Image 1: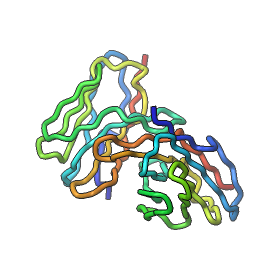
Image 2 (image 1 turned 45 degrees about the vertical axis):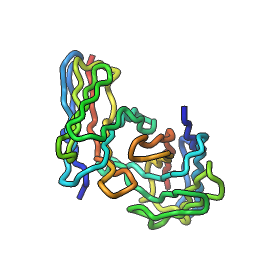
Image 3 (image 1 turned 180 degrees about the vertical axis):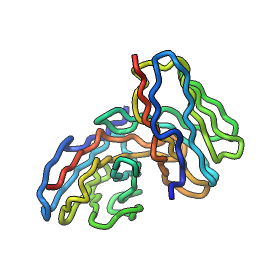
Length: 113
Length: 111
């Protein structure tokens, strides 16, 4: 089974801190994604990547950046955390969105205080 | 504005009842998927449908893709407490590569 592992299940950070969320997948998928999930708003795409060192903005990239130095690892960076970035963050990987869908990690629940 | 609208948003039913969840759009999709998400976990793919009119069954769950590939439904027969969770539909619009998610239906099955 494809496994997507997110480094932390729960994180509490202070406003203004730089935050790193790590995601690793073990099935050699080229496509990786970062979403945030908020009640009533569903899943919103932050950034995605189709290849190493490649990144594309999603629907809500402001306040975030990403890094993909290796195929299996896709990192989300909050440059200066703010309280409105308190959310559930979900990483996913995919071979083909069209036919195979996405495999998600268990999520990181981030609280910014 | 959501590309995919799900209804109902919340559903609470007794064990043994049947239910249907709907996923609608004005856009055409190359494929449409259903996921279930349990509290504290990421969504898990249940099924992918790619052909208009397609029907897929997964035990007590029946998934249908509309003829025009703009909508889908999920029917659960004889719901059980283990079916409790957030059900998400997601589609790849024609000509696109990424998935777009609906806002979800939160199902609670009461024993």
